[in-house]
Image 1 (tube, rainbow, N blue to C red):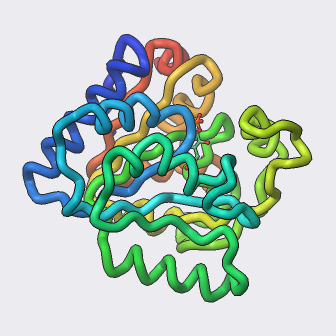
Image 2 (tube, protein in one colour):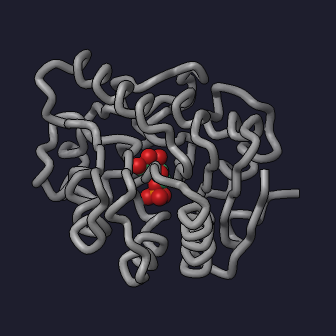
Length: 234
Ligand code: F6R
């Protein structure tokens, strides 16, 4: 694992942008993307850059189950608003939160990931060490699956909803095995709330209790965090 400690999230976004830019210059065609606050400075940098994504595919990590793409809390909406409206990709894949048949949707998404191997995967990390919606206890061998969100995550994500009852209880999520198949992984984490997760991911044992700890076994991971998030590292 390579660790980069940046002054703040803006500088962190700049570093992640450089990795994407270099990757694309070297032939990267598929970007794995995350939602949440951590990648926002990166997306802003992408939007304001002159990089052209019209020949690039993107595959998002996850989507809430039950939310339509035009629902303001959906991850579809988030990605349109922060990136795709301003920088269209050749094709952007996101799980369908309104899928009638969840088994079919899971299969469809796995096929997309299989057919479009991810060159660079952007990740955030939850306070409990989750990556995507892969909560503690998710098998490392998991592919795309339907997740029951933990109370921890429902509480953390309720800041984006009017009230906690509005937070969906389920999501469709790329599995840990698929994430580990990405050629390169860039994980962004900023602020005090991420201290314990960062320490456990980098210095703790590789355990399904801390999903992100599996990244220790990936050959090309860059962790970008600010001094606060890195504060508990020894
Ligand atoms: C989002 C996702 C989540 C977030 C994580 C951190 O697609 O998969 O795992 O990356 O919850 O969220 P933020 O960046 O808002 O702290």
